[in-house]
View 1 (tube, rainbow, N blue to C red):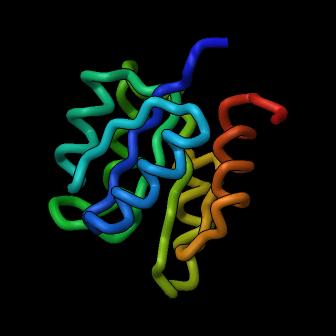
View 2: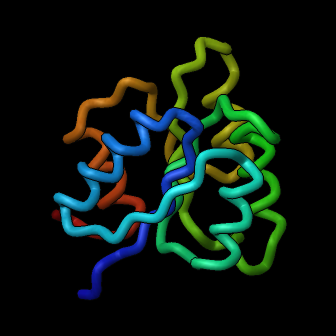
Length: 125
């Protein structure tokens, strides 16, 4: 099986570094974007196998990015896991209704994140 490519979209540089290291250690190729506009552009250009998407970001926010990716023919089938540190009550429901395959609350345990990534990519281990 070839190495899956994952796009991480998060405006927190420390979170980007942490997620990149974790995913690379697990054998994934990782690309990153630090805001909503870059995230959409990278998703269209790079065609990743999976996107990890933060909800609270400048230049559009994660739910707006989710909507834009779902209506584009180039990105509509890419699984998206939404990450959120937000306490807004309906964020999870809105993300799932918008097409996310999973919503994880930050901070997330590494094993939980990797299990969600593997599941979204259709991998059992």
